[in-house]
Image 1 (tube, rainbow, N blue to C red):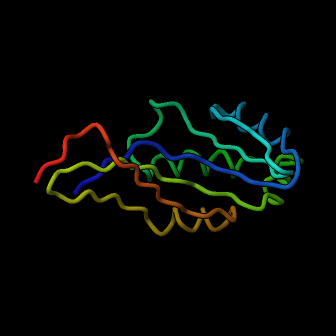
Image 2 (spheres, rainbow, N blue to C red):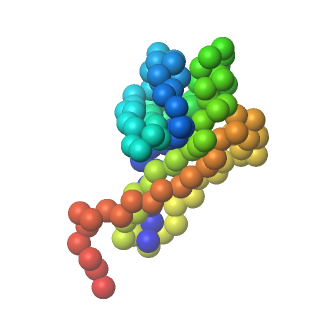
Amino acid sequence: MGAYYIVTDLCLRARFDFAVLDVELRRAGLHGRVSMNRGVWFASYSSSERCCRNPAEALDHLLGIVEGLDGEAKDIWDRCTSRRFDLGYECFNERFASRWQIKAALLGRLENVNGDLVVTIYRNDDEEETD
């Protein structure tokens, strides 16, 4: 079983409208969607497909945007109940390991913005099952 890197999403959750933060993240070049369900606001953002070839590059890019927030956008970021940097992989039926390194310095930056690291592995249903 192997996997290849797809994208890193920035996923936010809050019990208040974070429209000001949404505007700032979009101004920084992120694409996203915002929704609200039962009084909880959710958002998911990602960079353009050309941005990043691996999770470390994507984290560096997204963290640079978040670290550049100030004023009301920064306050809203700090008040969100969830700030997840979600590394997305797709798995496939190959017999080799996939490995990506996230260095300690990058994880330190993640901690400084009070972000969580999440890994999502998607199953590729297009491949035929092999025995």
